Length: 257
Image 1 (cartoon, rainbow, N blue to C red):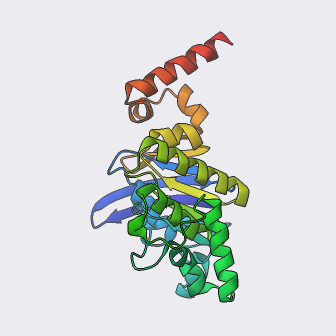
Image 2: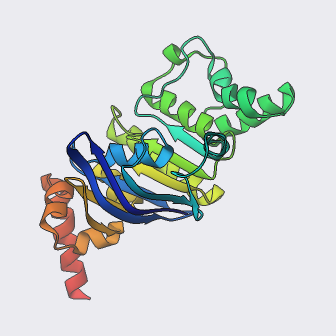
């Protein structure tokens, strides 16, 4: 479990995060949502150590990441997998070589073992047969799946996903959501997803943190979203007519019970 306590982050005189307190739970899809500029990306960067909080704690199973030495942080990062907004694949490497890259860097496995492990991960994301292709030869959705395979190849305890559905069509986004949810539950990872995709919120949001102008505005599950009276949350999630109708139907069904 990752726990954030009294987290503040400022840039010069501008406060971006104000007193954030939240628990990201093991074996669940933990979503960070909010409007552009709300601070959700800054929060994720504080979680993985790309930024350092102005004050507060980031606890990994009660170990304070902020206070760790450089060596301890390097060791800690080996427990993390990261999926970037762009797939961030190496263009000059094949799909298989991209997935093997973390193993080549950090694993004592033999080449045959590394290859076998990478192929297992490609099969996990339904990309068996694409291992010899280069990133430019596959679709954006397939590239995201390669990125997921690479992120889980070292069997991370913590999986961070920055806008994993960015630039994808709704059908492909659903595939990515289902993969991330399945991996989270199968591997019992602490998965943290920074997203603006409201389909993800309603589909896989097991533990949701809503940030508004740097403050924790609301927390709950996708079921709690339906029943929420928080107007700022409703304005974000139910901005489209489709989602407004979904909420109306859900509330009517709940009322009839």
